[in-house]
Image (cartoon, rainbow, N blue to C red; front, side):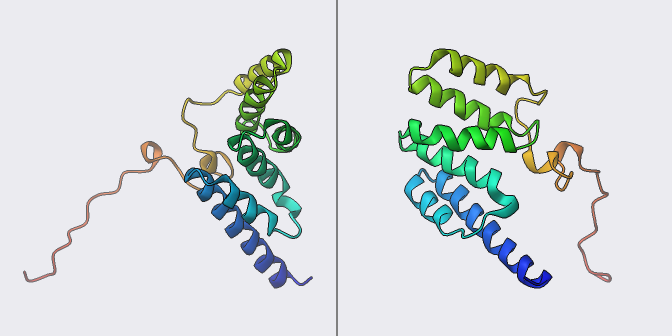
Length: 147
């Protein structure tokens, strides 16, 4: 596969992941699963796919099916972002009645040193900074000269 074909493939996968995440935000987990099923070869996106699939299954009440996907996500997603997978995993274990595993997963989810409301995008590569940390720029004069 050429570099440009790989980039196109990665862009398609990223769009499917964003669509699946959007469906989860809209409480439409079946549509999220359909989007995830359309991804042929996950490659480097496997951790995100596992996490979203696990969350979708958990939302549907299929916690036993969600556990393996969330376990993979918790293992594959780097610290500190894996916290979200561990938290969902804890909830699934609790729903299945496995109190000791639920407590263990809860403790792991809390062991990451994060703010209460992290910005996952800012954490990875500092691509986007939260509004409070953005540099303040002087206001521009929006009037045309001579007005």
